Length: 295
Image (cartoon, rainbow, N blue to C red; front, side):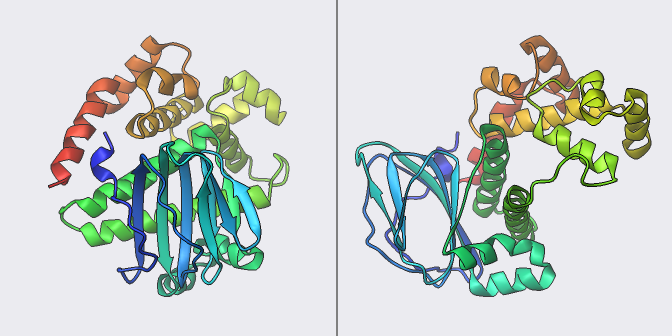
């Protein structure tokens, strides 16, 4: 499905664009690039392979779903422990100028890059569920870059900024873990908890026991804040995550189990009600649309 979005690997280590570039590499062999530095920020998002990343004097054996942020002027290179194994990754470059533009908008956009500069590099590892969302955002950006649709440039920047903010939020929350009682805002904590536990038991009774709050109070809070029952909110969030996983090439039979649906029939009915078509039809329609974007 995503084959057309792949980029043929190049050893070029400089930017052609002024602001950002992103690539999806899927190589059946390993092409070594010697130690080098950039004058831009690199987000290296590892998908598959058997490699080590050398950053200054640090060596990391990477696991799928690892993300590295390498700041300007830091030497780095990759070695392979099995050159014949498939090597898949996203490489995302942000220029210094664009970094400054983002910082002027809000420091929330540049936290992860400043942390990488302070430490020499920044590393985070995604769980499977969170990574599906990240991967869906990346493919949306790459698809937009291949398109010729109205408002393409504006949409590209929105996608880039959303992706960067997502990465910043992820590392910030890992660096600043918050207990359920750190905030008086129960609604905010409930939303945060639900988003992080979509694969688990999220019955109203269970949530009430977790927060030591009356389930009737929680139900009333959600109804007032969102205008819909909490179980509908949870279903919508689960369906959105399933959709992202399916578009990110997770099989339909696996996706619904990842996000808390107990059986396929209930998932199928909910998906059709939400999106107006079956999961298979949705995936095929997206595939056809993607093909039309590529010359």
